[in-house]
Length: 106
Image (cartoon, rainbow, N blue to C red; front, side, top):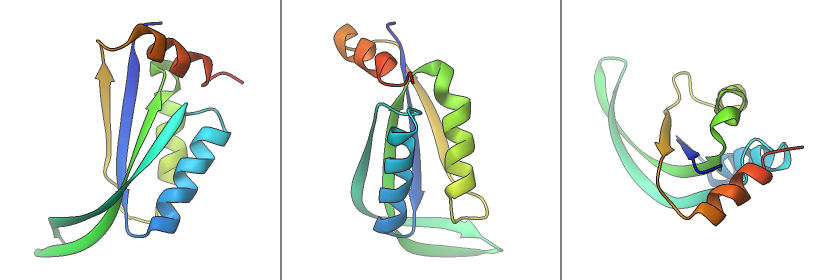
């Protein structure tokens, strides 16, 4: 296994970020999840520009677990339209990619 996927999202509270991260790892949908410090986001919402403080969450997973992980994130996400971005990493440490694959299996 030489590929991994990185799924990212942002939420409005650290506690929500922690819950999403813990649920994904406990459910073997992600091998690990990293909660990043506060970020200030500016975006269009309901015909106006909004600015808010958010917490980022980055999940490392195997490509075959992405759909299930996204479904779980969406189900637990507080936003009406959550940001969920998926990146495929084609090059990286092969030992790490193997670790991610092995830890996304039941």
